[in-house]
Amino acid sequence: MQDKEYRILIINPGSTSTKIGIFDNEFSVFEKTIRHEAKVINSFSNIIDQYEFRKNTILETLDKEGINISKLSAVCGRGGLLRPIEGGTYAVNKTMLVDLRSGFSGQHASNLGGIIAYEIASGLNIPSFIVDPVVVDELEPIARISGFSLIERKSIFHALNQKAVARRVAKELGRKYQELNLIVTHMGGGITVGVHKQGKVIDVNNGLHGDGPFSPERAGTVPAGDLIALCFSGEHYREEIMKRLVGHGGLVGYLGTNDAVEVEKRIEAGDEEAKMVYDAMAYQVAKEIGAASAVLSGKVDAIILTGGLAYGKGFVKSITDRINWIADTIVHPGENELQALAEGALRVLRGEEDVKIYPENLKTAKI
Ligand SMILES: Nc1ncnc2c1ncn2[C@@H]1O[C@H](COP(=O)(O)OP(=O)(O)OP(=O)(O)O)[C@@H](O)[C@H]1O
Ligand SMILES: CCCC(=O)O
Image (cartoon, rainbow, N blue to C red; front, side, top):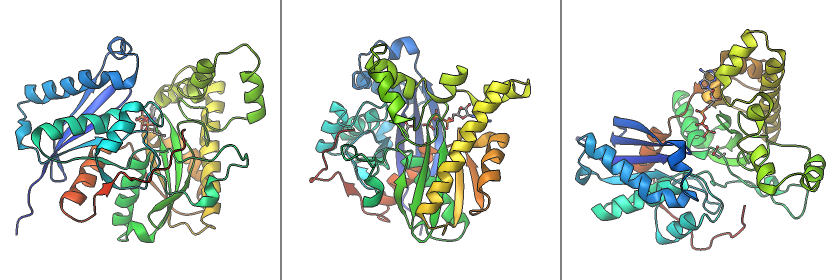
């Protein structure tokens, strides 16, 4: 018998663009990256104020493409900085909307994903979902202990792409994601290294606000004492230091660019500083993977490298040369978040997985 056909609108808001897709079951029939001019985006005082503008832009784009939204079965958005929750597909509900609108755990463009999905879907009387938001939290209790009793380690990472690639690799290996021990390394503007133990991410660096390897735009772990001295030197504003850690950290801080392709060109042209910094980024990634393998007591089925930086052959080699003694490395460059969102929505529409409800008994720690 023919499977029921679901048509799903996917919405993935990023800092400078909104990616949208229309999927008929798992097949993409339309995808578009709508770029937003910096001066337009910067004219809003905060991310949530962009809601009306981004929603209208999406609807106008679909209209221009001749896509009739009344035929949709569901709308699925990339979820935002909610309270910590376990991985899965969540129905957008009132509690979630309140947290997304208030930016409970901080401001992030993906906060708009759930809100816009809900608004479009409720007008059509169809369900709206988010899948594996960046706050997916499956950490084991031991991983939460930072060593400083006032600060708990948090799980903020590329959960959507990490889980999607991990599931894809499990399929390729003919195994179930829930049976495998994987180290998944997403290397994009931020870098996160997740320890996936039998389907749960039991440890991962907080890729947004501060630990792990440095990345094209983020500083990662920095020496705490020196950072505190800098903060209290009276020479810097809080926002300025934060910007130097996230946004202007990593490659941007050292080399003035977040573009690894440009860094590779500089290296080819003999730029020794660029070579040292790029090597240091690979070194820190390898070191984090080594730490992740210790979490799994060395029982690692595979190491996965994904995200934009995984296109860099030299960069990947520089990592694998240091970690190839741990397990086989599988490289899946780039990310496929629209597809991952569509698959998450489909799993619940088809009843293969229960839809999760944004929990009532929420943990309330602020980031
Ligand atoms: N062919 C390539 N070779 C080397 N690096 C590349 C290549 N293509 C893209 N990159 C680099 O990948 C990085 C961006 O990765 P990606 O697009 O996954 O990040 P993002 O989506 O902006 O951020 P994030 O993944 O953290 O959400 C940039 O530094 C970019 O220069
Ligand atoms: C680490 C969370 C996802 C992002 O890079 O914004």
